Length: 208
Image (cartoon, rainbow, N blue to C red; front, side, top):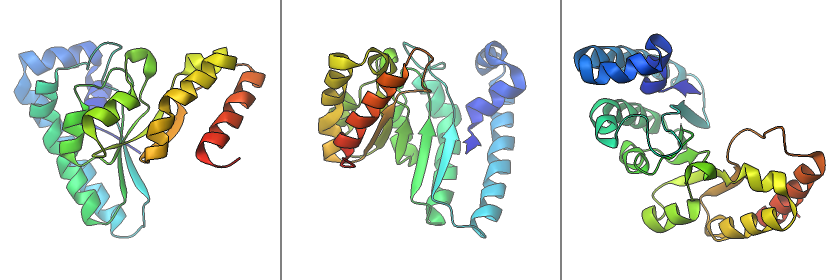
């Protein structure tokens, strides 16, 4: 698991100052990205030359409930080259899964992630308007998904969680989807509700 360039710059600068830098000092943003891109690429080359890795997971968390934190156009200009550089490197070493993590509404980012070579994205947050059923119609099998089950439905249990599982079942059956909670399990999910969800999940995925 590695911080992506947006995540790492946010650690260095803070969120609001970073967003202002994209407008006020894009050259400095490019310098920070270049530094992080080179560092991670060098580290990956050393690591992947010695270790067999099943997946590389990039954390960005760069979307709000309604949209990405910077525009898709900015993400294409500043971030896509690094995502693609790392993706090409990962694939050259035979890593089977290149995975992107971001909460929030990622509608405008998925096309860029497909271009960058990502195989998978997660957690597909339903409360932010993300819908793996709609994504499968829109993007076909060009990218896979992990997550996508509304945490609020898990907490509600009963008919609500059954309807939620039925909603995503066509994508699970079609392949390229590992269903799961669309974020960390919140505190309002009771133990009985969790057990019910686990049983439904096992039935959907063929374990029961």
